[in-house]
Amino acid sequence: MNRLLLLIVIVLFSSCSKSTEENKTTGNLILTYEIDTVIIDSGDDFLFLKYDALTTGASHDKKLFYNVDELGSQLEIIDLDSLILKEKIPLDRDGPNSIGPEHVSGFQALDNGNLCFYNIRQITVLSTDFQKVSKLHLYPEAFEGDTLPEKAQFAPFIDKLKSDGSLYAGLYIMFFENEILGIVLIDVKSGLLKLIPTDKLDFLKDLVYITKEGNATIGHGESKYVDFFNNNLIINTSAKNEVLIYDIYEDSIITKSYNSNFTSDFKKGSYMSEKNSDLSLKLKDLEVYFGSLVFDELNGVFWRYSRESKSKNPEKPTFEYVVTVFDKDLNQLHEEKLNVDWSHIPSIKFVKDGMLYTYINLDDEMAFVRLKPKLSKK
Image (cartoon, rainbow, N blue to C red; front, top):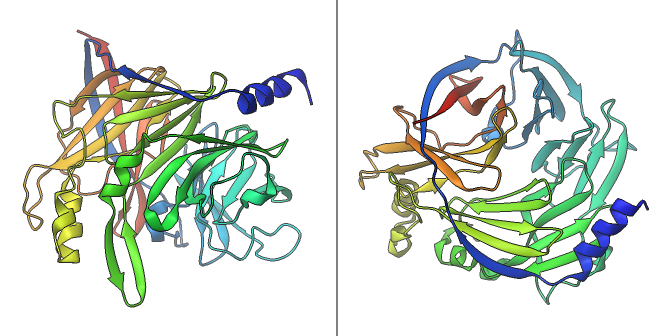
């Protein structure tokens, strides 16, 4: 183990977590933008468009876009410069290079080009020639270090590898109580597990609407986003205008809260008392929704979309969309209400050449809405 990795492990697993509050700062900027829509040319092939492009990701250099065809067990590779389907690669479900028979719940391309296929129990890493590099089994008992509280478990579908593959991050929860207990951090090489308890996400358990479908109980909660940036872990949610920043080296959590001039700053949960589940979920959709934070390497800033309906009539929503820009330290610099008539939930898939790409299904074709922002000082 080299000295840098040793230092990371020592700091990561021997210090105590602290929590402080920090408010936003706002700069004096003007934001102008252009918007267009591009369609991927798939030739005579059909692209996999189910699940709202959940299992997709862009390469580190943003030249390729990967789309996992879950039903056909293949990986669709799209050239983002030419916007053409490049090829489809079959994925093994059994054998030495298998990604496993389970449902693929997530996908990620690492900086070195390796491809990560997530499911509820493991992450399989394949090389660029689709040979198995490694497999991370997501069983708490498989790791050294901290031990989960009784009946707690890793949260499914809310996890991420650092872009160099060295660290794994997620959340640990009490599943049936809909309660998030804290952050999970695993050093992949050493197998050391660290738990960072926090109550900063407690508010989410009051926003889970429960429905019954046959014998199944389904909780409709909020989106949670986990990502790495430099030596920090960044966590935000769809329900609140704030971000949690966990400093891996300092073992400290900072909460940054923001104020919007265009939307509410938190989801009020007025739908929770509605007994009609169909109506409740429609009312839920009207309330404010914050997307994930995505870093723009060209401009050195983070971008985030949000939306909220000004109408409280679920049959006639009037959504307003907002784009917000933050600096590298996640201080809010500017927010802009967009002059658009979108209907989709805003989600930035990636940023390429300073443009924000959002996936849409356009008449059964894969397409991206691209917003090209320009920032200038007043």
